[in-house]
Image (tube, rainbow, N blue to C red):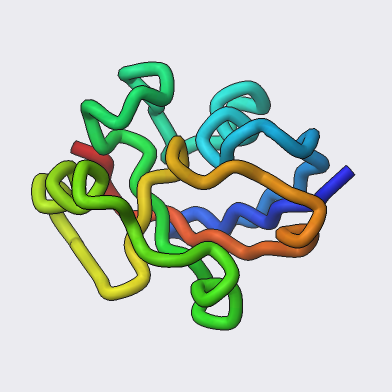
Length: 106
């Protein structure tokens, strides 16, 4: 099962095994990782699962869709490696991915 490392704004780190096919957001919400809300349940309509993809993983994850880009415009601290966790499905190829969480979710 792929491992995801979630690093909260304060540096607290949580490493989880998340089944392939689940999203980065689902892995965090289902395991009560602070800093990921996932208010809309994963339908890309709230941006409360904003994460920063570690630079070494960004090429594998790819760029956001136009819909996701529109939602990301609402986040407080948008960066070039910002993504919505609900839009990134975990695959075996993402085993070891590192995501950082913003200080605040909207």
